[in-house]
Image (cartoon, rainbow, N blue to C red; front, side, top):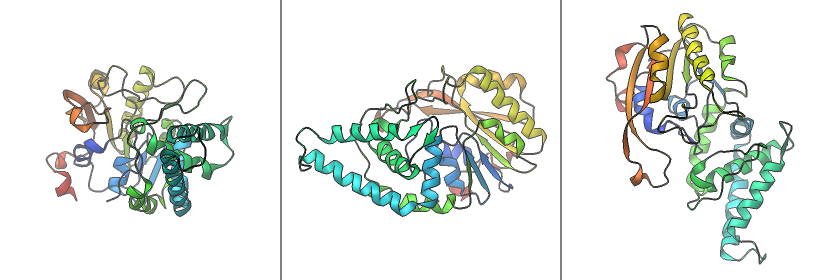
Length: 305
């Protein structure tokens, strides 16, 4: 089973058992319009996948993993080596330690894209992976000017630790369609028996919603309603739909969702903490809304495999 290759706020690794146990055993094509870290996609390894995210840097990264895997890894190994040289004072530049090296690469990364056009997509993907491994908690955040602005973290992940995962991810991505559009693009493509996984940014008042941003202007209540209405429309076409959202979105779905959908509350932990031992239980944090058959309600992830 493939795994995510980057850290991403709002990722669904901790909910995989709950999500996969409610996915139908058979479906046609797989659509995921809020891709992010792609934990569900990689765990399912769908043969007919369509993945999308509004973040062009993120989707360019996955496209480069698919088509330029070896150079991407090799150049990140070089960056790891240079970072170590700066940390140890062997870089030959008196005023540059590892922290200075990180911020120099962050500045370079931000310089590569202007007016939504990237001058060097491969270099951007190389730096995207480097920054994700070295920044604070693997967060992705941009300022009002569209510049990545997350500070350096304290526990970088060497690329050698995820090298095999990147190769497995490449095999899953090989025949997958990628795009960078508004999430509602799926309305043009989804048909009966397709599976659509909708994982929008959680409402701001949700207890695990920190850092879940969605492009310029964030993700409004109107956008949450649009997700719900899209799910209803796709359900009426005969598609399978599974939504994850924050507990504060519960009333939004209870008011309008058809009776064919089931709503499952999930207890969780506060996940934005670099120390897993400090991720305290905080009650219901997530909900799953799905119209998939109830046969799998009691199936565990191990049994599903």
